[in-house]
Length: 373
Image 1 (cartoon, rainbow, N blue to C red):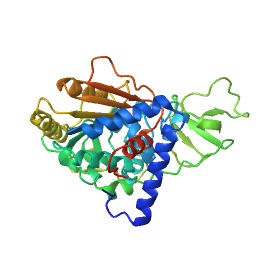
Image 2: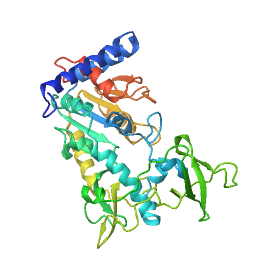
Image 3: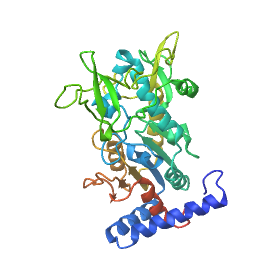
């Protein structure tokens, strides 16, 4: 089936992309060609599909990962000398809410404004053709699976929540998270980080003083020649152009998301998070468990896992654990960093480690009878 609303020219473009992916995968690449063909054979013979996706699935939609080759970055992080995951912590909503919302505004705009790439439609189309259907389990918080035609909220487990929903900072879990009001997020005024290497700035450091600095390649800061400092520049808590406004926080005076009951935060599982409201996640998980429970024990389940890392192995664990439950299940792991599959997991095991998500899916689809794209 074609992407909803696709024109003939778009269809031809998708077909050309798929053909190119297949040609690139097979030309002079015997191990890759064999893996792709094995994956296509599994999909062709399967009667149920479990889709398991991590951050690597979103790269072709223009989203970065937490770690590895495709790591994404919020521009101020380098100057602040903080890891992406450090800012992805709930503590900032209480200790420094304007910093927290500047960071999450960036993530919300990047994740929810982007469109799911064509690989989402391919996977959904494969599952829709199968006797026992499909389910999608993801650690991604972008909401892309819910937006994919034929999937929706009923066939998705967003095990870390999604930016599409909000909760209170101090949430008792009495009510479900509610849909994000995008207009409230759009209205947050965050100064543009447009600093270039060589620009002179001022950085506030841990003792509260503002030090003169110069922006380096990659966004790090160095001591200004006239400042008298030496060695590595200390981590910045705030950065501004000389005498200007803080570029790391929502502008003072701009209302932050909240209501009479208290301030809001995204309803996603953050690092070191003991306060996430899991009511929506729990309902999704119940639907996933019901789907898996209703599969016959001899189901030819195809588990396709894409872009799931080991640092937070939630998705890899779900994929392997579910595969082991069904004697006729097979696991296809697409991962540029680590595609290995332990022995004893699945009737068949296929590792694809030299293609990204979209290229691999298009290549597999091109080998299927009655290909989708």
